Each structure stands twice: as C-alpha cells, then as structure tokens.
Length: 306
Image (cartoon, rainbow, N blue to C red; front, side, top):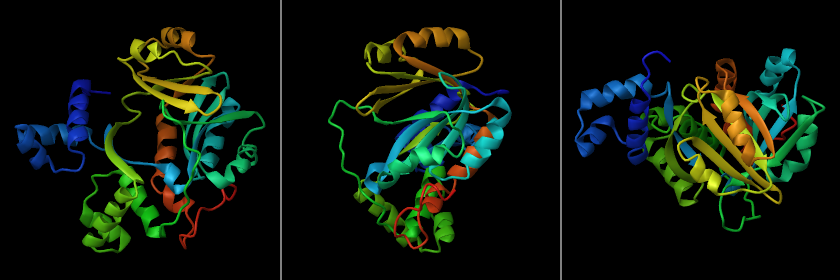
C-alpha cells in the first residue's frame, strides 16, 4: 500500500459524493480548498483506489441480481475464473473459502432466463448454490421487471459511465460517434426513466482486500449498529433471508473477524480480492452491458452463449 493514507481517500470520497461530476477547480472553489493540493490527492488516488461509478436500477432493464458459490479445486480456481469472466452476466468472481470452497460470484441475469442458471453454473462445477439478492429495504419488494428496450449505443454508454462516470463528454461522444448534445440527451433519458439512479465514488479492492460473506434467515438490526465502523453491505434474499458482506483489510485479524461475524449468520465464507482476479473482473466489467445486449438492441443474449 506504500504511502497510501486512508484519511486522504476518505476525504476524496466525501468530496466526490457531493460533487461526483464537477471539475476539480469547481470543487475547490465551492469548498474553499487549495486547487493544487486537491489535484495532488486526486491524481494520487483516482482510478487507482477509487472511481466514480454510475448506479443503475437494473430491475427496470430486466435484470435480477444473484450471488453464487461454486466448489472448485484449488488447482482449477484461476482456469475456472478465466472462463467465467468471459461471460458478461457474471459481474465478478473471487476466490472464497467457507461453507463452499472455491469461487464467489455476483450475477446479473435477465428475468426471463433465471431458469437457465443451473445449466449455466453446471458448466463450471457440479457443486454450487445461488441466491437472488435485492437491496435491503423494509418496503414491499416489487415483482415487476422491465426489459431492455434501448438502442445498443445505450449499452456502450452505460458501460462507460459504470466504469468511470467522470469520463469527459467529449471522450464519450467520440466513443459513441455521437455529438455532445446527443450524449447529454442520452444520459438525461436514462435519468428520466430512473434507470440511472446516481453517481457514487467507489473505493476498490486495493483498499479492502478481504470480505466476509454471511447468509442468515433472520436479521438482527443491532448488527448494523454493532458494526457501523465497518464497511458493510446488506441485501435481502427474497422468501429466504438476508445476505451480509463485511469488507476489511488483510492486515486485520481474519480469525477474529470470522469469530465475531459468525455469531450473526448461519453460513459464513471469506472472500479474497486478489489482484489477478481483479484484472479479470475489470476486463469483463468494462464492456459487460454491450456484450449482454444484442447488437440490434432487441434484447439480451442468452446467458448460455458464453
């Protein structure tokens, strides 16, 4: 990690949360900051340890989120991950050990292809389990799903904004072969349809290189207060329970973390954010939507094609 200072990353995350797309000069002026000091911090960390990313409501474009866990032998981990990360519907793959030893996956699956998941995962392992996961909320979960009804160029745009939402409009227009006003219209259209929810700064695995995944039928909300100082993600497994993921550094005591978190879940697993796997995931993620969508924009390709 070298001379990485977490307080500087936190400072940059806080600023970019307020001003995700504004120029550094504009941010410095609004916050009364020294522009050159801000630029030094930005250049030191941005695109290396955090990136501003577009957040999408994938339900409106017909995608369901799943987590999956595959039993894979140690000697086959990398080979299997390489195959999986050729599939754009597999959004990330990481080594994981616990209730299932092998690989942890996050999937985005077209709602009308859910019945193909077993066949898809069966190509990589004969021992797996998976769960649908939705955002944690106390509101009633919707069972209505949209479909992809946008042109193919929107898939390319969504990839660009997901990868780095601070990509200059001029650069985006060149990649799409569209004028700058057309690109702005396309972005506004995604916002107006509530597909594009927000732009948020996301620290990457270089900051947190371990995760503890827990699955439980009951959620004690005290656990959220108990671990408020940790980066924690909570999801709902419809009709079953809850999915929890804690992120932390390998410099921390992993044994203590497992012991601590295991009291609140029924299944537990440790996920490793390895640089080699990050490279595979980044390569896959960078063009995922444009490889999911048919070139004529008529819908999604089959999850079994890859």
